[in-house]
Image (cartoon, rainbow, N blue to C red; front, side, top):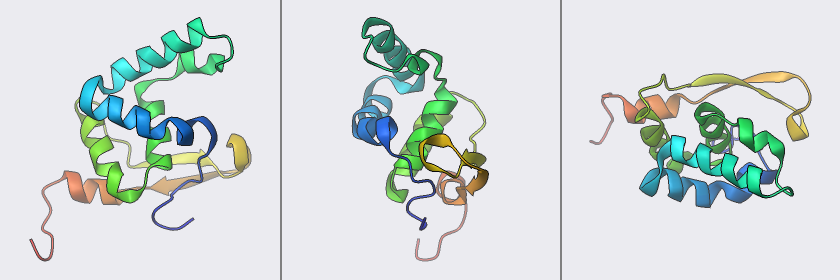
Length: 122
């Protein structure tokens, strides 16, 4: 994958990405979004049961993998409001559907934009 897509995430994360991003950044934050996903999974039997076990970190990582580079910084800013460590390096399954060997993903572009670092032209 190129620099804009660190992990080829499809399915539910890709489908819900624009709605969850809006919910996270403008309204609820990660805790509210996780609670909403769990409540939706509890009330609708067609939704995957795994949504009841999703954590804020799980949701953040799934959205990071699905989001284009220019939107990752806003997600990281919303996640940092939890006062939790910002995961910049993590492991994901390399195969489709979360199968296969694990590979390491590093998203240092988030750190560069979140931290006070000098930028050429600014």
